[in-house]
Image 1 (cartoon, rainbow, N blue to C red):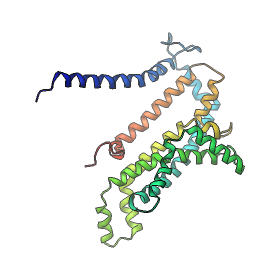
Image 2 (cartoon, helix red, strand yellow; image 1 turned 180 degrees about the horizontal axis):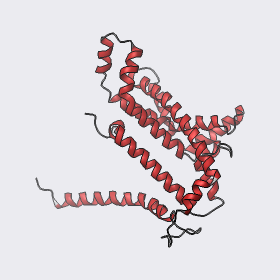
Image 3 (cartoon, one colour; image 1 turned 45 degrees about the horizontal axis):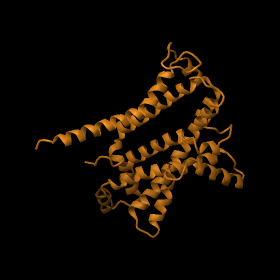
Image 4 (cartoon, rainbow, N blue to C red; image 1 turned 60 degrees about the horizontal axis):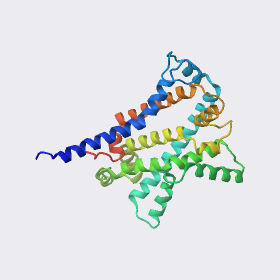
Length: 272
C-alpha cells in the first residue's frame, strides 16, 4: 500500500529530528577534538598550526598521572564489588518471590534518580562520623553505590533471557545446585556479567560529582584532578585529555558490543 504524502513528511521530519539531536550531542565533542590539536596555549578554533603538544603535556602532568592511577584502583575495586553484589541481588530478585521485594529493588535502583552530589555529601558526612574521611575505602564504597544499579540491570536482563531448561536438565541428571550454578548458569550469564562490569568501570572512572566530595589530594581521581587543573590553567591540555577519554570510552563500548552483544544484554533486541 503506497504511503501518503503526510506519512512521508512525518517520516522525514522524524529522521531530521534524530539527525539534529545527534548533531547537537556530537558537535561539542568534535569542537573539543579539533581544539586539542592546537599548537598555542590559548584556545583557538580552528587551529592555525596542528600539534600533539598538549597530548604530551596531559600525559606527563603528574596530577593527571596520579589521578589516573587512583582512578584505576577505585574503578577495579568498585566495579568488582558491584558486580558480585549486583549479581547476587539480581539472582535473588529474579528467582525468588518474597515480601518487600519491590521495596528492595527500588532501594537498589535509587541512585539512578538521586543526584550524585547528594550521595557524595552523604558519604562525606558519614565518613566523618566514623573517622574514615576521604580514604580510598570511602571513595570505593561511594562508587559501588552509584554503579550498582547498572550492574543489577545488566545481570537481571541476562537472567530474564536465560533458558532455564538447561539448568533443569542438569539438575535432573543429578547435578547439585552449586554445580549447576558454576557449570551452567554462570557461563550462560557471562556476557551480562562482563557487560555489567564494563559499564560499572566506565561510570566509576568517569564519576566526578560524588568524587569531588569524598576524595582528597592523595585519593583524587582523574576527573577531580581535571577540575582542579582547569581552575588554574586554561590551555588545551583539558581538550587533549577529553579526546583520550572519548576514544577510550568509545573503544570499550565498541569492544563490548562486538564480543558480548549489548543489544541482547540490554534487551534492545530479542535473543534467538
